[in-house]
Image (tube, helix red, strand yellow):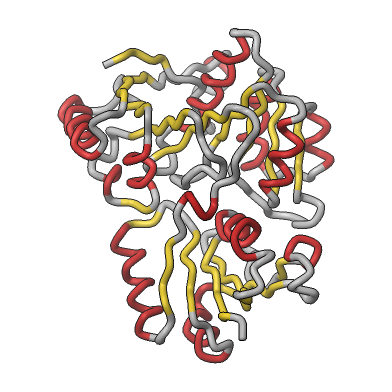
Length: 326
C-alpha cells in the first residue's frame, strides 16, 4: 500500500517538490496539497497533465486550515512542509500540530529537490523576502552579459493562473507578459529583465523549464523568491542579507539554510542601515558561515522625473546594488 503524503505549500515550492520527488514514486501517494500565503489557491486541483500518470484525477488543493481534518480523513502518514519565509518557531508549531495528529513531519533538503543543469548556474537567494535579491540577480545578469555570455534568468514560481498553460513560461518581449496575463506582481519581476534584453523563464515545471532554457543559455541565473532555496544545483550560490532586520538571517526558514550554504554573502543596504546592525549581521554571517566571501552593497533609489511625483504616493523599485568587498 502506498504511503499517504500531504504537502503543505503556497503554490510554488510544494509543486516543485512534488514534481521532482513524488510524481513518479509508486511508493507514495500525495493525497492533497494545502495552501497558504497565496489567495485563491485553495479549492483548486493540481491538474493531471502536471501530476502525471499516477494521478489521473489530479491532486486536490485545500486551505491549510483544513489540515487536521485532512490528516484524519485521508489517512495521512507523512506531511511535507514546503513553503518559505517562515520563522523557525512557526515551523515547529506546525510540526507539533502534525505530530500530535500522529503523522510524520518532514522538511526536504537540496539533494532530493534540486535539478542538475548542463549549464553553469548562479543562484541568487536571500535570508528574508525584501532583502534585495532581485536587484542583485539583475546586476549578475548584466555583469555576465558584459562578459559576452548568453544569460537566461529563471524566476521562482508565481503560478496564479492556469497551471497547465503556465507550466513553462518564456518572456523575451513585452507582448509575452500580455500573452500569459501576468499580474502586476509578476510584471514587477519580469519587466526589468526585458529592459536589459534578457530572457526570463518562470512557471510550474522547473525541470521542463531548465531543459528549454539550456538551449539558449551559456549561463543560468536563478532569481529566488521569498527566502527559498534554489530549485537548481548551483555552481555559485549568492545570498543577500538585510541589516535592517538583524537576527532574521538565522531566525527564518529556509533563509538560514541559504546563509549556511552561501559561497558569497551580500550585506545589502549598508547605505541606509544602522552601523551597529551592519556589524551585528556581519558577525553572525562570519560565525555561521566562516568560509563565505562577504560583499557590502548600497541599495540607492533613483527617480527619473522627481517633479512628476512630488506630493504623490508612489511605488519605488530599487534598481541595482553597488558592491564593495569587505
